[in-house]
Image (cartoon, rainbow, N blue to C red; front, side, top):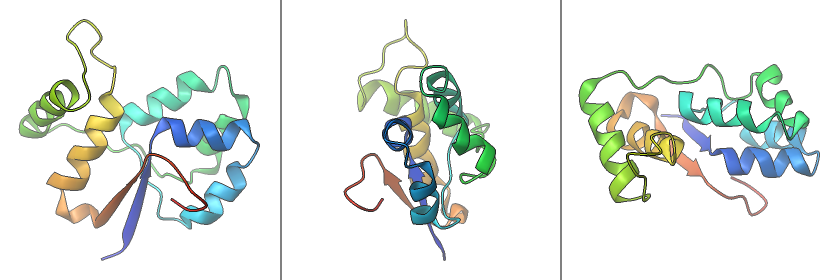
Length: 123
């Protein structure tokens, strides 16, 4: 199985702010993926970091992956609250992290996934 990388919005923003989105594309080498929540976060962040739009225009992360299965949705909410400290009053806070975790752990057909929540020269 091919190894996939799931960068979170912080990683995307970090590459955008230092004008290195093409470097991220090269490092991901067609193996980058993201969830709908991370794509939404990036879209919101692009208002402040216009270079982030390159992530979307280059298509380096593919189509955002949707979480639609009821068991996965419940798992996302449990993780968002219990692991990442999400609260009911802020339903999208830590949603990207929780969705990514569920994809990597509950969908073996996604291939071997790795979460890139920070980069030290490589994801």
